Every structure is written in structure tokens, then in C-alpha cells.
Image (cartoon, rainbow, N blue to C red; front, side, top):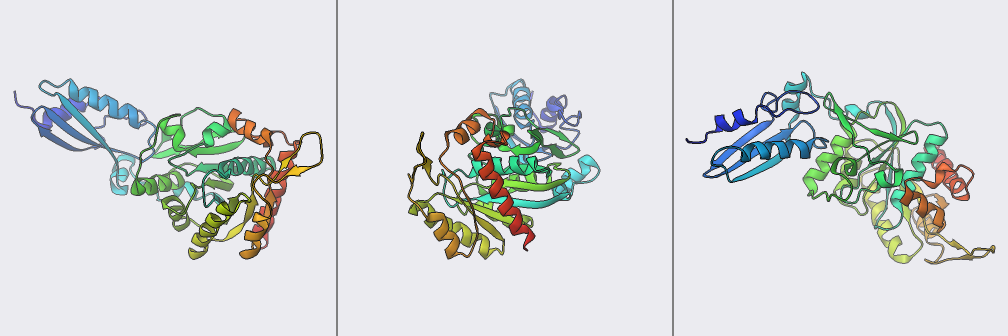
Amino acid sequence: MELTKEKVLDALKHIKDPELGKGIVELGMIQNVELAGPAVRVTVALTMAGCPYKDQIKEEVRSALLDLPGIEEAKVVITTMTSEQRAKVFGRAPSEMEGMKQVKNVVAVASGKGGVGKSTVSVNLAMTLAAKGYKTGILDADMHGPDIPLMMGTKERPVGSGGMLIPLEKYGVKLMSTATLAGRGTPVIWRGPLVNKAIKEFLGHVAWGELDYLVVDLPPGTGDAPLTVSSTIPISGVIVVTTPQRVALEDVRRSIALFKTHDVPVSGIVENMSYLKIPGSDEVMEVFGSGGGEKIAKAFKLPLLGKIPLDPAIREGGDKGKPVTLDRESEASKIFDEIAENFLKTLQSK
């Protein structure tokens, strides 16, 4: 008996979208069916790029295909619906930036190179703003190295509703990351176009609700993610993180130049790993040199928002999923409080 496209679709009718409770064939999610002897290739269009049920749907489709008589090889290709296709499913398509409608300020945390503690600054800045009474969220826009869920101590996965993803919440801060969708330890193997699309989905199709500040943790460098964020939404200010050594400062210059080229306001510099306090004394050791943050701030006529020491408590807090700023009386917490206050002053002086 010859296998046809109609028979393939019939075999997939029982598979439902977990969010919508309707069959993926009925919803028009099957975009293409290709048959070649004992092999079949099916393209499935998800309602959003960051769909939390992607792996489940893909495996159910593949399993159903392999159950068909004569099929020895089944490939499932995942893509995303267009706005028009999404509109047919939900009656209307969420506007491109619907999730951002009640977000008052977007704060991007950037760095020219990796390993400078950008995510540490992002998490503790968000925590500090929330402690000050501001409604705060954090978006992990580092698609290939998403650390925010680990540092915030959450293993939960978001759910979808009406074509929007519902952000997770921990310590009073809303958060979204590819790591919460893919699962811990699962590599996100995405090229530029898909990274761009996913970031736009995380901005516009996440139900952030009313926020005073959305902190966006950008990946290092001057690639797709910083360009997408800076060209997609208005950014209130960029905080650039560096360490004192020269190699970091050279990369910081490129990062600042990127934002200035796109007329995105850079609020100031944070120097991380600035010094190490010698236990049992008042002496400090400048492990990575000194004065780098001041030099770059002076060169670009930007404020130095603060200096963060090499403090084991900061590292331990990130590793344990309990940010150091949970303890409002800790020395590190007071430093982040100063950074937050200095940043807020830059926004007020606009």
C-alpha cells in the first residue's frame, strides 16, 4: 500500500499542542510533508520560537511517523509560524512587541568580552532594583551561554498562554532564558537569524506585564544579540562591564562604539574583579591591575558606576542560586546598591 501525504497527516491527527489542547494538524502546524521511499520528512511550525513544548511535540511526531508501515527513517524539522499564521490560530496575532507595552525602562548589561562577570552584575542589579521596590524583570539574551536560571536558583520551565510565554519568577524578579526552555546542560545550536528571532520573541511575546525595569543580560561582543536588542526596542541605558586589565578594556571600547553608532545611551561603566581584600587586614591586592575602569570612563566621558571586588561571597551566591544581594546588609550588597543608585541618577539626568 502506497504511503501518501494524506495518510501521514491522518497519522498525526491525534497529536495535540499541549498549550492549546487541539490537534497539530487541525491547527495548521504541519507545514510540509516530503516522502522518499522508506523516508519521510515533516516540517512542524510552532506558534512561537521559544515554545516550551518543542521537544515533546517533535518526539511525538517522529514516533507517530515511525509507526507508519514501510517507514524506516523519519526527520522532523521545527520552524515557527508567521504572524499571519499565528493570527489564524489565536483569532489575532499578538503584536510584535505586545509583551513590552507595560515595560517602562529597558536596561542592557553588556561587555566587550566574556568572563568579566556580566551575568553576575545583571542578576544582582535586578535583585537590588527589586529590593528598592521597583517591579523588575531579567531577560537572559545570551542564547549560547544562558546562566541566569542557575544564578537565580530556578529549574522551572515556563508555560504558554494565548501565544505568549509566561515568565518565571524568583525572589520577586520575573525572568526568561533559553536555559529554562532547553533544559540545563542542553546546547542551544542556533545561528544568527534564529538567535535574532528568539530574542524578539522573548521581548515581544513574553507576558512581562507591568515592569519598571527589564534588565537584559547580553552576550559578550558586538554580534547578533546586541544589534537585535538595540535596533528592536528603545533602551533607557546600557551598563558596560569590564575588568581592570588592558585586554578587557580594548574590547570594551568596541562595545561602547557599537551602542554609540546606534544612538543607544550608555549609562556608565562597572569595573568588576577590581581588587581583592586580604583576609585579616585592610590591605587590598589589585589582581588584574588598576585604574582601567576610570580610564575607559574618562576616555568616553562616562560615569564609573562602581567597583566590585573579587569576593568569594559573590561567586558562591551565583553558584548556589542565592544572589549575594539577598543579604541586604552584606558588604557586596551595599556595593551593588551604590551601583544601582548611580545608574538611576543617570536616567534622571536625561
